[in-house]
Length: 252
Image (cartoon, rainbow, N blue to C red; front, side, top):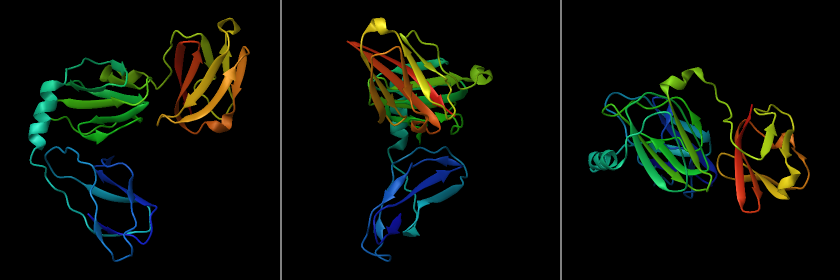
């Protein structure tokens, strides 16, 4: 595409059939409103058929002169490699780690949730660190999912259609601390931690893996102030000695 901007700070994304396929893309300064410069986005995979394309101005302050899609000649070859190298999974499925992985499934998916990752895609659509229940069409009857962790607690869960009766919630985990209320709605969060375990460090991470809060735990009860939590999913991590434990917290 050809874009022109007098200053930096603008951004856009492109949607196809209602799905964001580029993510937020920054527009650099080109030196003037008529100084058009070619800018490319990340590549993506589309199924055959007619598509509805929407160019979304997230933050204005730039001009667009042309928008062009280019077919990559090796797309089919890359798809074949992915299909050959990626193991087929049965749902429900989850994975934790920092390795780069890919999977294939023929089953219908209820939702995918991930956090602490550098990249998660399904059939070329970026769904990194989000809860998603709307997906692009299957390709040759299959979903191709890629995963790349960035944190040691990076996680993905892929839930099958049989999970439709479930609501987004918190999995019971075998931890030495409790978090409540969970889900939380504009209230302080209480951390209950056994003093017998000694001093520990409490950390809170958002879905992009950014640390938003940290404190030492040296009492049975600790509070996390409500103003820290915007709507979304957070990871509560407690590090005591050589042991790290984590829970998912949902803010409504």
